[in-house]
Length: 378
Image: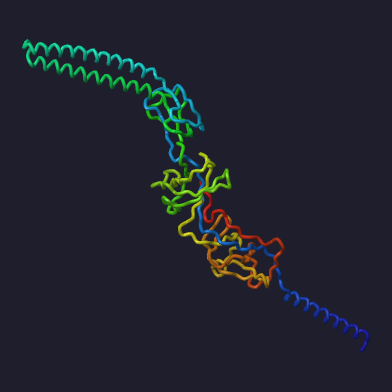
């Protein structure tokens, strides 16, 4: 064989070796296992079930809109919002001049009526004496008696008219009837008011409650006597157990929500106007595990989550039952248990028995939300 032919055979052999090496590398790459890093959460204990939270304000159980019993012009308003009052304290005054003139008129009418009573009494006594002496007839005596009775009745009417006039003068001064705090003022000095118009709103001391507004889809969960919990924005460590006292029979025409009143136990830390959050557990509440929304996937038209096997470091789909949504994610009632590792992100890349890698610090705990199933409403 020539030198040229020998060189060709060497080139052919070298090419076969290179092709063989390339095939081995490709086969090795195909058989190499893909290990994907994932973010997971550890399933915590189940929550207490679907809960609802509604924000409201602390109010007095009894609020009195106080007004004058007569009409007139306001001359003074002596209290402001937030001021504490006690029985007998003067809140406001009206101009009493016209009513004082009415008192003088009634006094004059009473004096005239009393004179008429004296005159009729003298006439009656004279008629009795004359009738005993048979000087006058019986009918004349009876007429004198009737005139006297009419005079007495007119005097009594004049007394009542005087008392009414004096009462009207007294009504020009608005005073507090109970211990309480002024929560609103509706009139100023110089304003002319009709009788009964609200001037001062007074919150009576004593029982307090929280007023909330509930939409119609949740109003069935509220009934008088149901136990609820109340928290307070200004004092995170204060939590009280209250009871539903009153549920409105009809919805508000504008907001289409129902007014609900929750009575609170007596606590000195609770002040009028404080922001409160009422937490209510649904009657048909079922405990559920809360997972991030990104952990939910679908497979064969069924909701699934991907669980990580701690020993083999592989993932497997697990069908779950979703009960609803929480403020922090989804609520799962069946399919998982406390302590399971669930893939929290990238579920679209998962497949059966895929190897995964859990880096240190990537395992998080699925936290129970403050109120599962319902965002806060005011």
